[in-house]
Image (cartoon, rainbow, N blue to C red):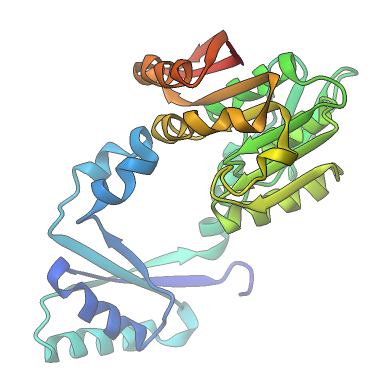
Amino acid sequence: MENNTNWIQIKAECSVDDLDTVCSVMCMINSGLMIEDYSDVESVLDGVYGDLIDESLLKADRTKAAVSIFVPESSSPAETEYLLVSRLAELGVDAKVSHTSVCEEDWADSWKKYFKPIRTGNRIVIVPVWEKYDAAEDDIVVLMDPGMAFGTGTHETTRLCAALLEGYVTEGCRMIDVGCGSGILAICASKLGAGYCYACDIDPYAIKVAKENVILNDTPNITCEVSDLVREVDPESANFDVAAVNIVADVIIRLAPDIGRFLKDTATLIVSGIIAERAEEVLAALRAAGFEAEREMFENGWYAAALKKA
Protein backbone atom coordinates (compact mmCIF):
# COMPACT_ATOMS: atom_id res chain seq x y z
CA MET A 1 0.00 0.00 0.00
CA GLU A 2 1.21 3.48 -0.78
CA ASN A 3 1.78 5.92 2.05
CA ASN A 4 -0.93 8.48 2.71
CA THR A 5 -3.47 6.58 0.60
CA ASN A 6 -7.06 7.55 1.29
CA TRP A 7 -9.20 4.53 2.02
CA ILE A 8 -12.96 4.21 2.21
CA GLN A 9 -14.48 2.06 4.90
CA ILE A 10 -17.72 0.55 3.61
CA LYS A 11 -19.76 -0.80 6.48
CA ALA A 12 -22.91 -2.94 6.45
CA GLU A 13 -24.87 -3.06 9.72
CA CYS A 14 -27.27 -5.98 10.03
CA SER A 15 -28.97 -8.49 12.29
CA VAL A 16 -26.75 -11.22 13.77
CA ASP A 17 -29.00 -13.71 11.97
CA ASP A 18 -27.95 -12.22 8.61
CA LEU A 19 -24.24 -11.97 9.42
CA ASP A 20 -23.09 -14.97 7.37
CA THR A 21 -25.00 -13.76 4.30
CA VAL A 22 -23.59 -10.23 4.61
CA CYS A 23 -20.04 -11.64 4.99
CA SER A 24 -20.49 -13.72 1.84
CA VAL A 25 -21.63 -10.69 -0.15
CA MET A 26 -18.81 -8.48 1.18
CA CYS A 27 -16.26 -11.19 0.26
CA MET A 28 -17.25 -10.68 -3.38
CA ILE A 29 -15.45 -7.32 -3.14
CA ASN A 30 -12.70 -7.95 -0.61
CA SER A 31 -11.95 -10.91 1.66
CA GLY A 32 -10.30 -8.70 4.28
CA LEU A 33 -13.37 -8.31 6.47
CA MET A 34 -13.63 -6.48 9.77
CA ILE A 35 -16.51 -8.10 11.67
CA GLU A 36 -18.23 -6.63 14.73
CA ASP A 37 -20.29 -9.30 16.48
CA TYR A 38 -20.89 -9.04 20.22
CA SER A 39 -23.38 -11.90 20.55
CA ASP A 40 -20.96 -14.16 22.44
CA VAL A 41 -18.47 -11.64 23.80
CA GLU A 42 -18.77 -12.81 27.41
CA SER A 43 -18.35 -16.52 26.72
CA VAL A 44 -15.41 -15.95 24.36
CA LEU A 45 -13.49 -13.29 26.28
CA ASP A 46 -14.44 -13.46 29.94
CA GLY A 47 -12.46 -16.55 30.82
CA VAL A 48 -9.29 -15.23 29.19
CA TYR A 49 -9.34 -11.44 29.38
CA GLY A 50 -11.75 -11.01 32.28
CA ASP A 51 -11.17 -7.62 33.82
CA LEU A 52 -9.84 -6.06 30.62
CA ILE A 53 -13.15 -6.33 28.75
CA ASP A 54 -14.30 -2.80 28.06
CA GLU A 55 -17.66 -1.90 29.58
CA SER A 56 -18.91 -0.69 26.18
CA LEU A 57 -18.51 -4.24 24.80
CA LEU A 58 -20.62 -5.68 27.58
CA LYS A 59 -23.34 -3.11 26.89
CA ALA A 60 -23.34 -3.60 23.11
CA ASP A 61 -26.53 -4.81 21.40
CA ARG A 62 -26.08 -8.59 21.05
CA THR A 63 -28.67 -8.80 18.27
CA LYS A 64 -26.77 -6.49 15.89
CA ALA A 65 -23.60 -7.01 13.88
CA ALA A 66 -21.55 -5.12 11.31
CA VAL A 67 -19.13 -6.02 8.54
CA SER A 68 -16.63 -3.60 7.00
CA ILE A 69 -14.28 -3.67 4.05
CA PHE A 70 -11.67 -1.06 3.10
CA VAL A 71 -11.21 0.00 -0.53
CA PRO A 72 -8.88 2.66 -1.96
CA GLU A 73 -10.56 5.93 -2.85
CA SER A 74 -9.29 5.53 -6.42
CA SER A 75 -11.27 2.32 -7.04
CA SER A 76 -14.80 3.71 -7.46
CA PRO A 77 -16.07 3.08 -3.91
CA ALA A 78 -19.48 4.53 -4.79
CA GLU A 79 -19.90 1.78 -7.39
CA THR A 80 -18.82 -0.80 -4.83
CA GLU A 81 -21.32 0.52 -2.30
CA TYR A 82 -24.12 0.45 -4.88
CA LEU A 83 -23.26 -3.17 -5.77
CA LEU A 84 -23.44 -4.21 -2.12
CA VAL A 85 -26.73 -2.43 -1.49
CA SER A 86 -28.26 -4.00 -4.61
CA ARG A 87 -27.09 -7.54 -3.87
CA LEU A 88 -28.20 -7.42 -0.24
CA ALA A 89 -31.61 -6.11 -1.31
CA GLU A 90 -31.92 -8.95 -3.84
CA LEU A 91 -31.25 -11.43 -1.03
CA GLY A 92 -33.86 -9.81 1.18
CA VAL A 93 -31.31 -8.76 3.79
CA ASP A 94 -32.17 -5.66 5.81
CA ALA A 95 -28.78 -3.96 6.11
CA LYS A 96 -27.70 -0.33 6.48
CA VAL A 97 -24.71 0.39 4.26
CA SER A 98 -22.55 3.47 4.92
CA HIS A 99 -19.04 4.72 4.16
CA THR A 100 -16.30 6.70 5.92
CA SER A 101 -13.03 8.09 4.58
CA VAL A 102 -9.85 6.96 6.34
CA CYS A 103 -6.33 8.27 5.69
CA GLU A 104 -3.85 5.41 5.90
CA GLU A 105 -1.24 7.52 7.66
CA ASP A 106 -3.75 8.51 10.35
CA TRP A 107 -5.10 4.98 10.54
CA ALA A 108 -1.72 3.31 11.10
CA ASP A 109 0.33 5.93 12.91
CA SER A 110 -1.80 8.56 14.62
CA TRP A 111 -1.39 6.83 18.02
CA LYS A 112 2.38 7.37 17.87
CA LYS A 113 2.16 11.04 18.76
CA TYR A 114 0.92 10.03 22.24
CA PHE A 115 3.77 7.59 22.92
CA LYS A 116 6.72 9.51 24.40
CA PRO A 117 9.81 8.40 26.39
CA ILE A 118 8.69 7.22 29.83
CA ARG A 119 10.69 6.28 32.92
CA THR A 120 9.78 3.15 34.87
CA GLY A 121 11.41 2.49 38.21
CA ASN A 122 14.70 4.27 38.82
CA ARG A 123 16.80 3.53 35.74
CA ILE A 124 14.74 2.06 32.90
CA VAL A 125 13.51 4.50 30.25
CA ILE A 126 11.20 3.19 27.50
CA VAL A 127 11.85 5.18 24.31
CA PRO A 128 9.76 4.83 21.12
CA VAL A 129 12.10 4.29 18.21
CA TRP A 130 10.83 7.41 16.39
CA GLU A 131 11.62 9.73 19.36
CA LYS A 132 14.95 11.33 20.32
CA TYR A 133 16.07 10.90 23.93
CA ASP A 134 19.20 12.21 25.65
CA ALA A 135 20.03 9.48 28.15
CA ALA A 136 21.51 10.25 31.57
CA GLU A 137 24.61 8.36 32.64
CA ASP A 138 22.77 5.66 34.63
CA ASP A 139 19.75 5.30 32.32
CA ILE A 140 18.94 1.92 30.83
CA VAL A 141 17.30 2.78 27.51
CA VAL A 142 14.85 0.29 26.02
CA LEU A 143 13.89 1.13 22.43
CA MET A 144 10.38 0.09 21.52
CA ASP A 145 8.26 -0.18 18.38
CA PRO A 146 5.23 -2.09 19.67
CA GLY A 147 3.14 -2.15 16.50
CA MET A 148 -0.22 -3.53 17.63
CA ALA A 149 1.28 -5.71 20.40
CA PHE A 150 0.72 -4.85 24.06
CA GLY A 151 3.67 -3.28 25.86
CA THR A 152 4.74 0.32 25.36
CA GLY A 153 5.54 1.17 28.96
CA THR A 154 2.62 3.60 29.13
CA HIS A 155 0.27 1.14 30.85
CA GLU A 156 0.47 0.91 34.64
CA THR A 157 0.94 -2.86 34.65
CA THR A 158 3.98 -2.71 32.36
CA ARG A 159 5.55 0.07 34.42
CA LEU A 160 4.95 -1.80 37.67
CA CYS A 161 6.54 -4.98 36.31
CA ALA A 162 9.55 -3.11 34.92
CA ALA A 163 10.05 -1.36 38.25
CA LEU A 164 9.96 -4.70 40.09
CA LEU A 165 12.41 -6.24 37.64
CA GLU A 166 14.95 -3.61 38.66
CA GLY A 167 14.91 -5.02 42.17
CA TYR A 168 15.06 -8.71 41.32
CA VAL A 169 17.06 -9.25 38.12
CA THR A 170 20.64 -10.13 38.96
CA GLU A 171 23.72 -10.43 36.76
CA GLY A 172 23.61 -13.61 34.68
CA CYS A 173 20.19 -14.82 35.91
CA ARG A 174 17.63 -16.69 33.78
CA MET A 175 14.31 -14.92 33.16
CA ILE A 176 10.99 -15.93 31.56
CA ASP A 177 8.42 -13.42 30.26
CA VAL A 178 5.01 -15.12 30.04
CA GLY A 179 2.59 -13.37 27.66
CA CYS A 180 5.42 -11.17 26.43
CA GLY A 181 3.50 -8.95 23.99
CA SER A 182 6.05 -6.55 22.47
CA GLY A 183 8.87 -8.22 24.42
CA ILE A 184 9.38 -5.17 26.59
CA LEU A 185 9.87 -6.95 29.94
CA ALA A 186 12.31 -9.53 28.58
CA ILE A 187 14.31 -6.70 26.99
CA CYS A 188 14.28 -4.78 30.28
CA ALA A 189 15.58 -7.88 32.07
CA SER A 190 18.30 -8.43 29.49
CA LYS A 191 19.51 -4.84 29.80
CA LEU A 192 19.44 -5.16 33.60
CA GLY A 193 21.97 -7.97 33.30
CA ALA A 194 20.01 -11.22 32.85
CA GLY A 195 22.10 -13.88 31.15
CA TYR A 196 19.21 -15.49 29.28
CA CYS A 197 15.56 -14.54 28.71
CA TYR A 198 12.73 -16.63 27.27
CA ALA A 199 9.75 -14.63 25.96
CA CYS A 200 6.56 -16.49 25.02
CA ASP A 201 3.09 -15.50 23.86
CA ILE A 202 0.11 -17.25 22.28
CA ASP A 203 -0.14 -14.50 19.62
CA PRO A 204 2.15 -15.05 16.59
CA TYR A 205 1.99 -11.33 15.75
CA ALA A 206 3.24 -10.44 19.24
CA ILE A 207 6.20 -12.79 18.80
CA LYS A 208 6.99 -11.22 15.42
CA VAL A 209 7.02 -7.77 17.07
CA ALA A 210 9.03 -9.05 20.05
CA LYS A 211 11.72 -10.49 17.75
CA GLU A 212 11.96 -7.17 15.92
CA ASN A 213 12.35 -5.31 19.22
CA VAL A 214 15.02 -7.77 20.37
CA ILE A 215 17.05 -6.93 17.26
CA LEU A 216 16.35 -3.21 17.72
CA ASN A 217 17.78 -3.36 21.25
CA ASP A 218 20.72 -5.65 20.40
CA THR A 219 19.71 -8.19 23.04
CA PRO A 220 20.51 -11.53 21.33
CA ASN A 221 20.25 -13.47 24.62
CA ILE A 222 16.43 -13.41 24.32
CA THR A 223 14.52 -16.29 22.71
CA CYS A 224 10.99 -15.44 21.50
CA GLU A 225 8.56 -18.26 20.74
CA VAL A 226 4.85 -18.81 20.22
CA SER A 227 3.74 -20.92 23.16
CA ASP A 228 0.57 -21.72 25.09
CA LEU A 229 1.89 -19.69 28.00
CA VAL A 230 4.53 -21.87 29.68
CA ARG A 231 2.92 -25.24 29.04
CA GLU A 232 5.18 -26.01 26.07
CA VAL A 233 8.37 -25.08 27.91
CA ASP A 234 10.29 -28.09 29.22
CA PRO A 235 10.40 -27.69 33.02
CA GLU A 236 13.56 -29.82 33.18
CA SER A 237 15.51 -27.25 31.15
CA ALA A 238 13.74 -24.17 32.54
CA ASN A 239 14.95 -23.44 36.08
CA PHE A 240 14.34 -19.72 35.80
CA ASP A 241 15.44 -17.24 38.46
CA VAL A 242 12.83 -14.61 37.59
CA ALA A 243 9.40 -14.89 35.95
CA ALA A 244 7.26 -11.96 34.79
CA VAL A 245 3.59 -12.74 34.17
CA ASN A 246 1.80 -9.57 33.09
CA ILE A 247 -1.51 -10.88 31.77
CA VAL A 248 -4.87 -10.78 33.59
CA ALA A 249 -6.13 -12.12 36.90
CA ASP A 250 -8.02 -15.11 35.48
CA VAL A 251 -5.02 -16.40 33.52
CA ILE A 252 -2.64 -15.95 36.47
CA ILE A 253 -5.05 -17.92 38.67
CA ARG A 254 -5.18 -20.66 36.03
CA LEU A 255 -1.37 -20.71 35.79
CA ALA A 256 -0.76 -20.66 39.55
CA PRO A 257 -0.58 -24.46 40.08
CA ASP A 258 1.95 -24.91 37.23
CA ILE A 259 4.26 -21.89 37.25
CA GLY A 260 6.39 -23.13 40.17
CA ARG A 261 7.62 -26.10 38.13
CA PHE A 262 9.54 -23.72 35.90
CA LEU A 263 11.24 -21.77 38.69
CA LYS A 264 14.18 -22.40 40.99
CA ASP A 265 13.39 -22.65 44.69
CA THR A 266 14.98 -19.22 45.20
CA ALA A 267 13.20 -17.63 42.21
CA THR A 268 11.07 -14.50 42.13
CA LEU A 269 7.64 -14.48 40.48
CA ILE A 270 6.43 -11.05 39.34
CA VAL A 271 2.74 -10.77 38.46
CA SER A 272 0.55 -7.93 37.21
CA GLY A 273 -2.34 -7.18 34.87
CA ILE A 274 -4.50 -7.37 37.99
CA ILE A 275 -7.08 -4.79 38.99
CA ALA A 276 -6.79 -3.90 42.68
CA GLU A 277 -10.18 -5.38 43.53
CA ARG A 278 -8.97 -8.85 42.49
CA ALA A 279 -5.54 -8.72 44.12
CA GLU A 280 -6.53 -10.86 47.11
CA GLU A 281 -8.17 -13.47 44.85
CA VAL A 282 -4.96 -13.82 42.83
CA LEU A 283 -2.80 -13.91 45.95
CA ALA A 284 -4.98 -16.68 47.41
CA ALA A 285 -4.39 -18.82 44.32
CA LEU A 286 -0.65 -18.17 44.43
CA ARG A 287 -0.47 -18.92 48.17
CA ALA A 288 -2.22 -22.23 47.50
CA ALA A 289 0.53 -22.91 44.93
CA GLY A 290 3.25 -22.22 47.50
CA PHE A 291 4.10 -18.54 46.97
CA GLU A 292 4.13 -15.61 49.38
CA ALA A 293 4.15 -11.93 48.41
CA GLU A 294 7.41 -10.17 49.26
CA ARG A 295 6.64 -6.79 47.71
CA GLU A 296 3.38 -5.26 46.49
CA MET A 297 2.75 -2.16 44.38
CA PHE A 298 -0.41 -0.28 43.35
CA GLU A 299 -0.90 2.38 40.67
CA ASN A 300 -4.17 3.88 39.44
CA GLY A 301 -6.22 0.86 40.46
CA TRP A 302 -3.75 -1.74 39.15
CA TYR A 303 -1.79 -4.19 41.29
CA ALA A 304 1.56 -5.93 40.93
CA ALA A 305 3.53 -8.16 43.28
CA ALA A 306 6.88 -9.92 43.59
CA LEU A 307 6.50 -13.33 45.24
CA LYS A 308 8.85 -16.01 46.53
CA LYS A 309 8.32 -19.70 47.08
CA ALA A 310 7.28 -20.20 50.68
